[in-house]
Length: 203
Image (cartoon, rainbow, N blue to C red; front, side, top):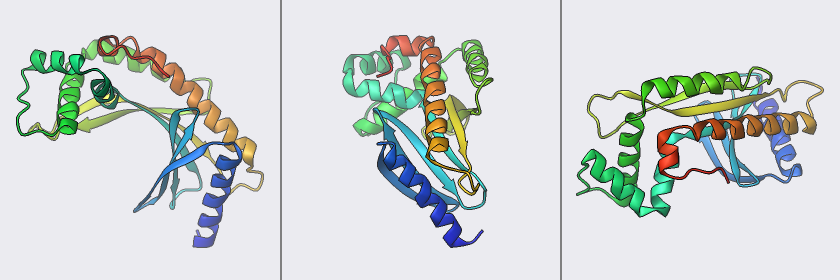
């Protein structure tokens, strides 16, 4: 597609973001497009505009390790409990690295059967929507085995800005749908033992 067409499409969507009174709180250029972090009522969404597709994506992420690490920042006693449980050496680690290392170790300890049940329940949430739900995985940089760890899910809704009838209602519908499914995912995730440990509650 022509560069002008792409930039016009990105600009059009961003104008709808602002007209919806959502906030653009971050931006990143990648090799295959532009990525923006949008905040709506204290909920962050990623708006990704790829250069090689005829659609853009609005994404809600639930990262288990990030949720745990954030809880450590506010409740040091939980971190100390997990440090003792997994006998982690905290020497030579910055506070942020320590939080992330312990969080990943706790994620590895999630029961596989419980995780599989949750993923099944979560996928069912998108059956009556236009959203796509995928599992997220990450590797532990402190583990030489480089094993992929299940770390939550993403919810993605598609925007079609190149269509002639695309307008602000399309953005609004997709954003609402993605957030609605995302909030339902939060409720399902509360069933994880670790979410109970950290007292997770969606704001």
